[in-house]
Length: 266
Image (cartoon, rainbow, N blue to C red; front, side, top):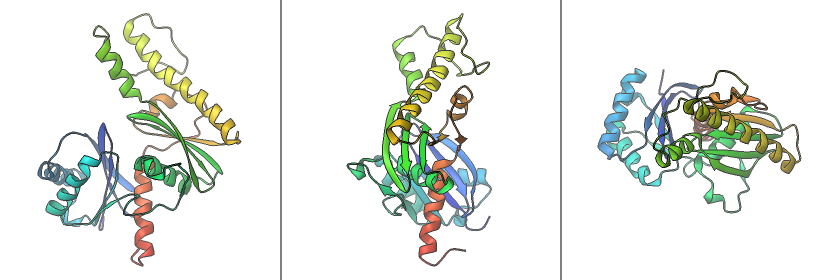
């Protein structure tokens, strides 16, 4: 791959790192978000180059969506010291070609806005509802070329952790189900698995129906992304598309737009 990109989804729980070209996302890995120094993060990312089978000096740029501001300057330091390549934060350094109708536009998490931009580029339908199963479960509404806002609900993993910290006798659960129909749990682990997975599926089904009414479009297209999307979608009706790399695609397309505007695309 010639002049690849590093794409970063820097979240509260995990940091996802993807190798990409201007044409697509190639490989990804996920590490926990924790306290780093610029040196420890730089060394980790040089190791990531070995996993991706590239040399650090091949990387043309880093493109970042971050909701963890204290780590931003550490990421900048790692890029400068270990890679000597430019780093761009979206949407601060690379504006997105989507109208932001949030009451206070700066309050929108970068991840939500980038996903909305990506959804608008990937799907031609007038109305989109984008569901991200991350640290929180977010519902974001896009109509025409405008990001309207959405809903923020508890996340799958945070809900499981909350149960674990307040109920010491509960067992570890796998979030595995045996079929699309809800099963009455006859042991604690099954009860938890069924409750979490089908509970979130029911939340998605109910909230998407209500959002469609609020948006005035019962043909709105539902797109799911995030780490738990596959598990929830397997028992959830009404999801039209699953796009695991929706945010990374948005970062890639934003960078591609920028260099094309600068007359450097190839």
